[in-house]
Length: 176
Image (cartoon, rainbow, N blue to C red; front, side):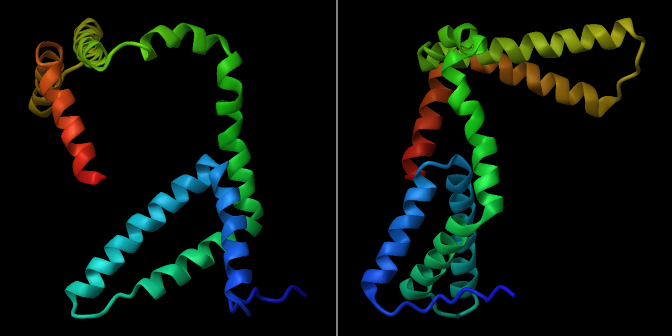
Protein backbone atom coordinates (compact mmCIF):
# COMPACT_ATOMS: atom_id res chain seq x y z
CA UNK A 1 0.00 0.00 0.00
CA UNK A 2 1.30 3.41 -0.97
CA UNK A 3 1.60 5.99 1.76
CA UNK A 4 0.45 9.54 1.28
CA UNK A 5 3.22 12.02 0.62
CA UNK A 6 3.89 14.43 3.43
CA UNK A 7 4.82 18.01 2.76
CA UNK A 8 6.45 18.84 6.07
CA UNK A 9 10.12 19.49 5.51
CA UNK A 10 12.69 19.06 8.25
CA UNK A 11 14.87 21.89 7.04
CA UNK A 12 14.91 24.82 4.69
CA UNK A 13 17.71 23.14 2.74
CA UNK A 14 15.55 20.04 2.06
CA UNK A 15 12.66 22.26 1.02
CA UNK A 16 14.78 24.29 -1.39
CA UNK A 17 16.28 21.10 -2.88
CA UNK A 18 12.78 19.83 -3.66
CA UNK A 19 11.76 23.16 -5.13
CA UNK A 20 14.93 23.17 -7.24
CA UNK A 21 14.13 19.66 -8.51
CA UNK A 22 10.60 20.76 -9.30
CA UNK A 23 11.84 23.80 -11.17
CA UNK A 24 14.17 21.63 -13.29
CA UNK A 25 11.24 19.40 -14.23
CA UNK A 26 9.08 22.39 -15.07
CA UNK A 27 11.79 24.25 -17.00
CA UNK A 28 11.94 21.55 -19.68
CA UNK A 29 8.19 21.03 -19.98
CA UNK A 30 5.78 23.27 -21.85
CA UNK A 31 2.91 21.31 -20.29
CA UNK A 32 4.15 22.02 -16.77
CA UNK A 33 4.70 25.65 -17.68
CA UNK A 34 1.10 25.86 -18.90
CA UNK A 35 -0.19 24.17 -15.74
CA UNK A 36 1.83 26.58 -13.59
CA UNK A 37 0.44 29.54 -15.54
CA UNK A 38 -3.14 28.35 -14.96
CA UNK A 39 -2.45 27.65 -11.28
CA UNK A 40 -0.96 31.10 -10.79
CA UNK A 41 -3.95 32.69 -12.52
CA UNK A 42 -6.29 30.70 -10.26
CA UNK A 43 -4.24 31.78 -7.25
CA UNK A 44 -4.68 35.44 -8.19
CA UNK A 45 -8.41 34.87 -8.53
CA UNK A 46 -8.52 33.11 -5.14
CA UNK A 47 -6.53 35.94 -3.59
CA UNK A 48 -8.87 38.59 -5.00
CA UNK A 49 -11.94 36.66 -3.82
CA UNK A 50 -10.45 36.18 -0.34
CA UNK A 51 -9.53 39.86 -0.02
CA UNK A 52 -12.86 40.94 -1.51
CA UNK A 53 -14.75 38.93 1.10
CA UNK A 54 -12.71 40.51 3.89
CA UNK A 55 -10.26 37.64 4.34
CA UNK A 56 -6.49 37.69 4.44
CA UNK A 57 -3.95 36.29 1.99
CA UNK A 58 -0.39 35.58 2.96
CA UNK A 59 2.75 34.98 0.95
CA UNK A 60 3.46 31.96 3.19
CA UNK A 61 0.24 30.36 2.00
CA UNK A 62 1.26 31.05 -1.59
CA UNK A 63 4.75 29.56 -1.07
CA UNK A 64 3.27 26.45 0.52
CA UNK A 65 0.81 25.87 -2.33
CA UNK A 66 3.56 26.39 -4.94
CA UNK A 67 5.79 23.92 -3.08
CA UNK A 68 2.95 21.36 -3.13
CA UNK A 69 2.57 21.89 -6.86
CA UNK A 70 6.28 21.34 -7.58
CA UNK A 71 6.46 18.20 -5.46
CA UNK A 72 3.30 16.79 -7.01
CA UNK A 73 4.32 17.56 -10.58
CA UNK A 74 7.82 16.12 -10.19
CA UNK A 75 6.41 12.70 -9.22
CA UNK A 76 3.37 12.62 -11.48
CA UNK A 77 3.33 10.07 -14.30
CA UNK A 78 0.41 11.93 -15.87
CA UNK A 79 2.31 15.23 -16.00
CA UNK A 80 5.45 13.56 -17.38
CA UNK A 81 3.33 11.77 -20.02
CA UNK A 82 1.65 15.01 -21.04
CA UNK A 83 5.02 16.71 -21.09
CA UNK A 84 6.48 14.13 -23.47
CA UNK A 85 3.41 14.37 -25.72
CA UNK A 86 3.69 18.14 -25.84
CA UNK A 87 7.46 18.07 -26.23
CA UNK A 88 7.54 15.75 -29.24
CA UNK A 89 6.25 18.31 -31.77
CA UNK A 90 8.67 20.97 -30.57
CA UNK A 91 11.57 18.51 -30.88
CA UNK A 92 10.49 17.52 -34.40
CA UNK A 93 9.74 21.08 -35.58
CA UNK A 94 13.24 22.10 -36.82
CA UNK A 95 13.52 19.02 -39.05
CA UNK A 96 10.01 18.94 -40.51
CA UNK A 97 8.95 20.10 -43.95
CA UNK A 98 6.29 22.42 -42.52
CA UNK A 99 8.99 24.47 -40.78
CA UNK A 100 10.60 25.21 -44.14
CA UNK A 101 7.21 26.21 -45.60
CA UNK A 102 6.09 28.35 -42.64
CA UNK A 103 9.56 29.75 -41.86
CA UNK A 104 9.36 32.72 -44.24
CA UNK A 105 5.98 33.77 -42.77
CA UNK A 106 7.29 33.51 -39.21
CA UNK A 107 10.29 35.68 -40.05
CA UNK A 108 8.12 38.58 -41.34
CA UNK A 109 7.91 41.78 -39.33
CA UNK A 110 4.87 42.22 -37.08
CA UNK A 111 3.06 44.78 -39.28
CA UNK A 112 3.27 42.49 -42.30
CA UNK A 113 2.04 39.55 -40.19
CA UNK A 114 -0.97 41.60 -39.05
CA UNK A 115 -1.75 42.64 -42.64
CA UNK A 116 -1.43 39.03 -43.75
CA UNK A 117 -3.75 37.92 -40.94
CA UNK A 118 -6.36 40.47 -42.02
CA UNK A 119 -6.07 39.32 -45.60
CA UNK A 120 -6.53 35.69 -44.53
CA UNK A 121 -9.66 36.58 -42.52
CA UNK A 122 -11.22 38.53 -45.41
CA UNK A 123 -10.49 35.86 -48.03
CA UNK A 124 -11.71 33.08 -45.73
CA UNK A 125 -15.01 34.83 -45.03
CA UNK A 126 -15.55 35.68 -48.70
CA UNK A 127 -14.78 32.08 -49.69
CA UNK A 128 -17.23 30.87 -47.06
CA UNK A 129 -19.93 33.21 -48.37
CA UNK A 130 -19.36 32.00 -51.94
CA UNK A 131 -19.56 28.36 -50.85
CA UNK A 132 -22.78 29.00 -48.95
CA UNK A 133 -24.35 30.65 -51.98
CA UNK A 134 -23.18 27.87 -54.33
CA UNK A 135 -24.58 25.23 -52.00
CA UNK A 136 -27.79 27.29 -51.59
CA UNK A 137 -27.62 27.37 -47.79
CA UNK A 138 -29.74 29.99 -46.06
CA UNK A 139 -27.95 32.27 -43.62
CA UNK A 140 -29.78 34.28 -41.00
CA UNK A 141 -29.23 37.76 -39.68
CA UNK A 142 -26.78 36.62 -37.01
CA UNK A 143 -24.65 34.79 -39.60
CA UNK A 144 -24.49 37.82 -41.90
CA UNK A 145 -23.72 40.10 -38.95
CA UNK A 146 -20.85 37.87 -37.85
CA UNK A 147 -19.48 37.65 -41.39
CA UNK A 148 -19.72 41.42 -41.81
CA UNK A 149 -17.93 41.95 -38.51
CA UNK A 150 -15.16 39.55 -39.50
CA UNK A 151 -14.70 41.26 -42.86
CA UNK A 152 -14.59 44.65 -41.12
CA UNK A 153 -12.03 43.36 -38.61
CA UNK A 154 -9.92 41.87 -41.41
CA UNK A 155 -10.03 45.09 -43.42
CA UNK A 156 -9.10 47.09 -40.33
CA UNK A 157 -6.13 44.78 -39.75
CA UNK A 158 -5.05 45.21 -43.36
CA UNK A 159 -5.34 49.02 -43.34
CA UNK A 160 -4.33 49.83 -39.76
CA UNK A 161 -1.81 47.20 -38.63
CA UNK A 162 0.14 49.73 -36.58
CA UNK A 163 -2.87 50.39 -34.32
CA UNK A 164 -3.26 46.69 -33.60
CA UNK A 165 0.47 46.24 -33.01
CA UNK A 166 0.53 49.15 -30.55
CA UNK A 167 -2.57 47.85 -28.75
CA UNK A 168 -0.95 44.42 -28.44
CA UNK A 169 2.29 45.94 -27.16
CA UNK A 170 0.38 48.09 -24.65
CA UNK A 171 -1.51 45.01 -23.45
CA UNK A 172 1.74 43.10 -23.00
CA UNK A 173 3.25 45.98 -21.00
CA UNK A 174 0.20 46.17 -18.71
CA UNK A 175 0.29 42.39 -18.09
CA UNK A 176 4.01 42.37 -17.33
